Length: 353
Image (cartoon, rainbow, N blue to C red; front, side, top):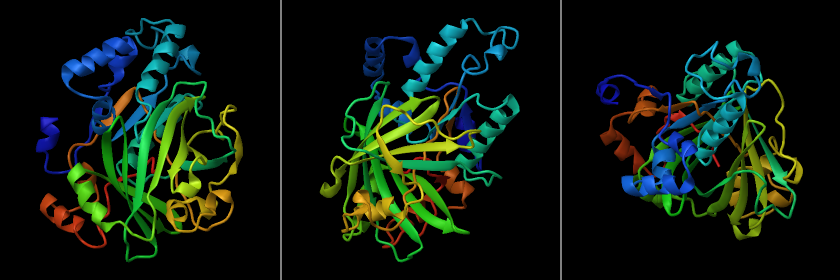
């Protein structure tokens, strides 16, 4: 980390294991005792430690013929044990804003390519194929619990004042148990394709940018249940505000460059897919026109999720900023206080919920 921090140019730190991995190998009580002894919390270890988390599903799930000591002498678990540990490890990262699952639905060469593309996309590097994102309107009543392991995250989205009609600016707070991470996001269109970029904020920067909140838009707040189904990462977002949307929900999935269409969880009643429906974007929901989730507004919402596990990726300091040519911290602070933030955030937002 010190070496990366000392580099003058962009730096990327890739970890083969993440700080949360240990949770898969001990009881909940032991894990809580470890956190208490270290003086840290889950949001600190899971969300703030890594800009993105990539879970490479074990070969024991979907590629069993390649699992064993013949291909990796360090393997000691049986296929069944490897599957159980893989699931437990993945569950420790549920709730991370940028979690992507790289499964074994394609051949190994394609799996490697998907990893490289995912990391490249996460760092803002242009790649030949882009991930696809889907969202679905949930039928009432929205499930309050699910028959799978879930992690509940509280999310708040505020729309910022903006002088450019072709883009949307917003700040996001997400976290658990009063511990939060903060983001600034910018949605714009390049060749008619939506491009969403993101910059992580400190709490102080977030408070400063709250002064730029557009009074014509209401605060969006929701409970988001993160879970996996068939090696896919979903988020079920149930709205709290605006009050007209309270209790309504959308299901989000980032399908990446999978070789197949998403397999939707049968335990969530879905009304219809609204991926291309412009009535379901943040601005349509936050605007003082409350017909979107009941069937009528106009605009577009983007939902993305990233997954990875066997590797956890952390970009040092202002790597994202450097990759996109952002200026010095001093200049950045100056930009933060402009009435209309003009800076392009660093990494593409992979889960703009």
